[in-house]
Image 1 (cartoon, helix red, strand yellow):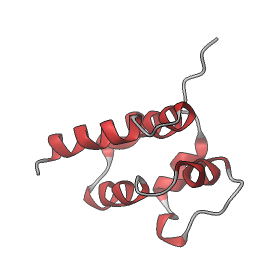
Image 2 (cartoon, helix red, strand yellow):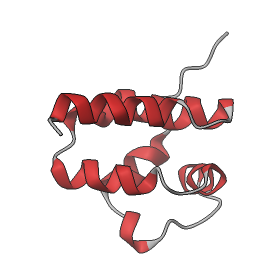
Image 3 (cartoon, one colour):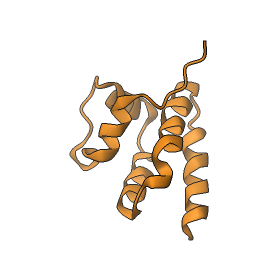
Length: 88
């Protein structure tokens, strides 16, 4: 699958989690960072999308420690939460 098609699939999966909060958090994260990822980061994000939303959200806000395989640049960026739009 070419990179553009893969990014479109990841975009859809990141924005359609089933829970609005997860859609905002994971989808917003993908929008902010996805296009800059190399192959290894894309594979890691694909694996991350297989995890439960509650787990991903806990890792992002720091209430749970992410598994070692996710430690690194993606979880560090996920924890910043500066990519989540806040409506006023």
